[in-house]
Amino acid sequence: MSKDSIHHIPTSELKPFREQFTKPITLFGPCSAESEHQVLETALLIAAKFPNNIFRAGVWKPRTRPGSFEGAGDPALQWLIAAGKETGMPVITEVATTQHVEACLKAGIDMLWIGARTTVNPFAVQEIADALRGSGVPVFVKNPINPDLSLWMGAIERLHKAGTDQVFAIHRGFHSFETDVYRYAPRWEIVIDLKTKMPDLKVICDASHISGDPALIPGVAQKALDLDLDGLMIEAHINPAVALSDAKQQITPAVLHTLFEGLVFRKADADDKDFHRKLLELRSRVDSTDDLLLQALITRMNLIRQIGDFKKDKQLTILQIRRWEEILNRQLEHGIGSGLDGVFVKKLYELIHEESIRIQTDLFRNA
Ligand code: PEP
Ligand code: MN
Image (tube, rainbow, N blue to C red; front, side, top):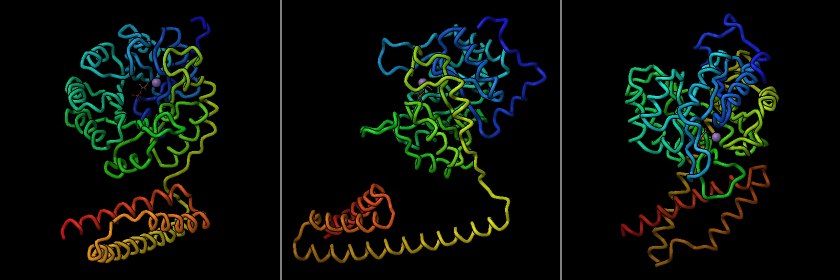
């Protein structure tokens, strides 16, 4: 695209900065800044559809092994600044060291994100937090590679304590040894836990890194919206096939637009009174059912204690595989027959069984 054909967005149409934080917050842009042309062209195509977007591009790339493209480095900061000026979008990049922070502050990068490989290291996070002191630059903190919620919250707290008042979280999935369709297991329960523990924190879902495959991005993005997350990060590249990093998961700005149009934005609260009453009624029935569930577990564990005493007297082993198989199969049959998901029933019973064994082991130990 020649400079002449660039679509200029008049300054009067530019949105005030804070509008970038109204829901859904979007952080769209390429995985990496590869050239001035690639950055600007991608930015223009994205800004044309998403004028409130925060434009992302990695300048220093944290590669698992050396030798692959490690980012264009410092010169790329100017490409981002130029793209930001041209389109009105604030720009964001990843920082992992104090030198990165200093270079970004000097260049005038609007916002920063901390990558998954940095969040795991409290020393690195503290240094970044200290380097940002007094800058007022908003920071997005990706979850650590490993599913450790405290580490994620710790990084957010370090930034807050060092005076960064605008801190956001980015859910990008977790490394897992189990094979999964996802590149990084979403483990949604961890995000729900984070929202419960930090209700005022805005959480963005990085659907690209969770998915690792364009075909999975819409489902992940929709799930994030249905969980009432505050926004999406999606990687878009003018020509994904030749991208220097994450080529397999990037999509074109046009595909991004279609994908976004296909998402359903549901409301967290209903304004319709009848609906609200019905919802309250159903929720109170859920609460009563939860009480029954917990009572059933209390009863079960009391029985387990009685059996434990009995086994101890008769010198029987705690684990009796045949009995466990019988329990699991019976509940699987019942559960699946009544419409429950088999994987869910299995997980639930494994958890209950594990706790039962723990209770009996304690009993044996305190003989
Ligand atoms: C990225 O956003 O391109 C990136 C490297 O992310 P993460 O830290 O989640 O791997
Ligand atoms: Mn990437």
